[in-house]
Figure 1 (cartoon, rainbow over the protein chains, first blue to last red):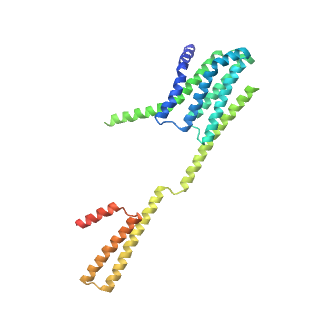
Figure 2: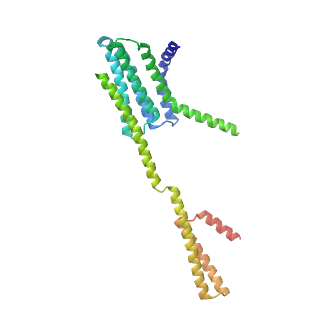
Length: 170
Length: 120
């Protein structure tokens, strides 16, 4: 079951990047979502874009110079993203919504997973977090995609509820 | 060493984000408290209603007092009653137009009242 879940995540991961970009755009077009949601969404999309862009070259670089660069770069991207979420909210004097907070929490978890994987694989040499690392990173992406879809889900549920109540009245 | 710094930084930032959340909520509650201290639009409406009633009452009292004075001086003859009635109607319409100008009375309602009284 766990391997199925891992495979499913790997398959989903290919589409998650597209959906994480599409959800905020759809939310913007439907005039849904708060300022805090869009801060979280923009930071998430930019960090994902940078991660995808540097992934291949970074792997080649890490193979030659040490895997520490691989983990430290992604951990730094996550830490910088959390800092950006904080700074943008502070600058725009916006209340941190549950979406931005959840995305920051996702970044923090993914960052800790990167560090934990480095400690497990390189420092301690135990190498027990191999599968966990892949699953955790992909689950983080999936959770973030769900969080970014939440305003749309709420909007659709409200529309469906109002439609059903109208049908009942008629 | 670098990873320890990253972990501490992430914890610090998460703490700051949570603190922002709390301070924003506190700011909101302070704003709500300040708003509660300030009279809202309903209170203004109520005050306007009281002022309107007072104005109407004072206008009526002024008319009554002038009419009583006129009657006292003119006596209760038919001519004097007619004169007083004309004077009353003129003063009343002037009073109403003033109140309409001040925005105390609704011009549409007053117009409809006039039409109704004319038809009767």
